[in-house]
Length: 544
Image (cartoon, rainbow, N blue to C red; front, side, top):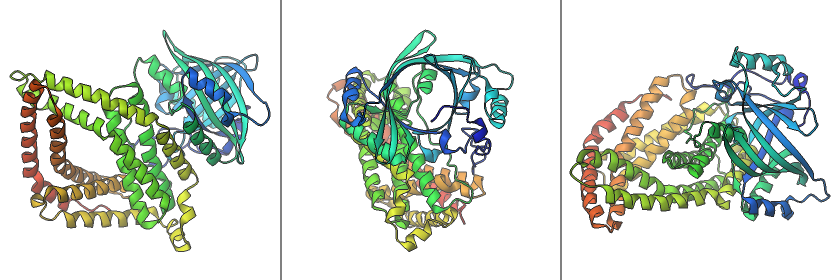
């Protein structure tokens, strides 16, 4: 991103209307949704420790052919209203001092989900003062910002003090700036050390940036990070840890084609996965593990669905890797689910008569171990490479490269047509496999559950294409209800595996109560299957 007053240039390029939202109830995450190339920031950020930072400084991967290093002391002050109006709309406003140079005011905002977590909108304007002056922006942007904050004043929220060393690399046809940032984030009485390596695309194609990022992750002890300094500072200021992130309703462009649907759906699942890393790394909330597994299941379902129409070998590669990661996260999720059931079920009911402490302590030991494994998995180079390569694949829409003429033609067909056909096919498969559901053996029930899961995800992906949101909601709810009932047998089997491994006698005694509770849950689930199946069959097929 080049410095300078670009307001006039962008006046014709920026559409301030919110992104198209097929589901009206979903709030737009940003107010600026269309930008030109000069106001789009694409970068990869890696965190490391002092040792990794020193290794990166001398790494041959990050050495320019001719010396061009530059060192600067940057102080950035971030502004918002006390109510957090800009933050709520996915926007960041800062004023940065760079030595004796004129201060630079910067506005950043979220882009469409297909851009992923590695790209943001950005406008930089030189200013004379150290307070933000919104009137320096283009008239339309200034008016929109003033409309967001109304008469509430912008005040300094926190600041960053960074020593930045930069180098300019030529990688393939791209020009990439490497920034070595060493410093601190300061929010009131709290601070957070910063030791980061950022790769920012200055010109050329993003593919070369992602390729360099993948090689860097494999060669050095660094961790891919999608939490910006401003986001980090907001959590620091509020004395909170990063929160888990649920998936958001998909936003397709007007008159979306199948090509657009592939990009939007897969980008949504990848972003959902990555945006939960921080909550796992820095917190202990079980929802982060759950959301990552949901994201990977949705990704695998989408890849399989698109592979039927578009025979792209990379779909299978990404699907296998998503399965590997989700499976490795499974033990952590099982511990959390078991812990919740014990506390909310038998412990709440029999707590006065039975000591569940030994069982919970054994469970906590197991949970600490598998959570450590989960964090190592997320930090592993293989996981970073998977994310970067899949994002590069989405950025270049790599599925186009392996298709024949007839298959390529499908990409221009309306996405709504593909959605209706996919939903009809999955519904028919579920209806066929679910006949006499209550009498099916566990193995066949599991197969029905998988089909229902894929059907539910497809309904969630594509429900916004169809007018009847109430029918979509009813259909998804009936499918989810069946999934839950069919999952009771799996839950009981997973819990029994943990209980069988318990060595403490007192833990085993409490485990007997838990086993009985699970058996009761299985009985109740089986009793409700017929009614749930009937409700599913009666739910309106909203795509017809």
